[in-house]
Image (cartoon, rainbow, N blue to C red; front, side, top):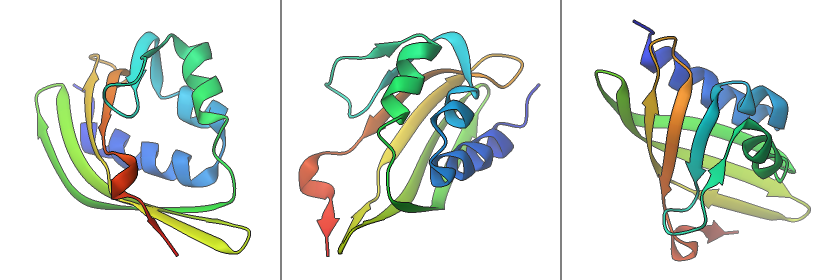
Length: 119
């Protein structure tokens, strides 16, 4: 079975890199992404890569807490994005499911605009 905590670490590093193709490569071909929960889900790796194409600026990530049970995980992390003179900080909780090879089959991000701190 895949090391799910290692995939989470790789995911956060890929997000911090700002490289949409690197992030999308962690997803299974027919995966779904709902970010934030309640928005229209992105379906398939191409749509997921397009979603992550919005990553811009200087990005850092930090894993705050993770829980793994079988092929599912919930984790709390911090993302800090510096764009121009502004700094955006958000601490979402992501819930992911994985296949046996460790590819992400679904991701749901729990956060709302009110959770973002702009400085």
